[in-house]
Length: 322
Image 1 (cartoon, helix red, strand yellow):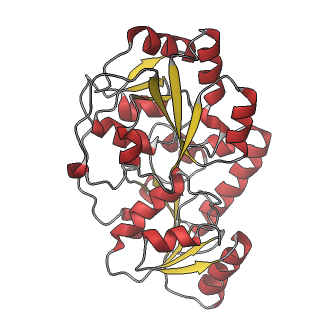
Image 2 (tube, helix red, strand yellow):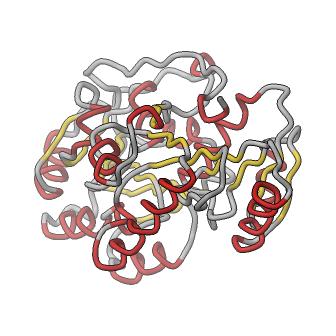
Image 3 (cartoon, rainbow, N blue to C red):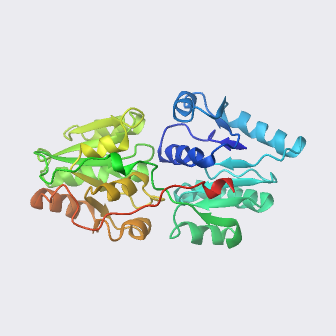
């Protein structure tokens, strides 16, 4: 089996989702195609798989050669929304429609539609509220679409009890640094407008990159610390925050949020179809970031959730590898 991560340039949520799924393949022989920057991390997390370092173009040539020229019977699983036209035995992942928005997105959607139709690939979705309407417009029949959970593969038996008393200042967790759809500017602008910069610390789970450096330059008065996700585990991160906050409206799932909801970390989110689909009973929702930040800083809610915790099943072999 060939698993392609070659379209990923950072260890973001899509990367860790793929790692979780590959762990479920058992004894199946797997070759992971990944760019050289991420190869050491793949080897660390998946010591039993074969890792082939390759850039995106080389990965495409390798798959096309194997499937169309050599007629290989190997299955191809790509954990991004990049199907290859005419290539059989393909499975791809679809997270959200954010990349297909706008004028440039229209071209991407046309290419996506062409490739999914000509390859007749299977499509694994993370949510139903955004994915199903988009894929239906692309003409992908329902029988080629399947759902797989994005809940992180973490042993919750190893976690410790949370302290209900929040910190001073409040420790607000943010997750993800790979895209501007995270909408951190709205959170930081609300904090400044409400004059609450001394009342909160923001702990950002992700990686230092141009987006983070831009945020620090634009909001020098915000107390912002990056917690590197390659070095700090998600459970350890959540043990160090009082709340999890998000102003994103275009997430495909919010993978760390599933873990937060299971650990009892209070979540304060803006309303969006996907968040309501998955966390409607496990989070407190707001219409805008000003109302969200005002509530947290005025009320200082307990640092242990008072709503039901999210439950999850023990992961089985992922349907991505069916």
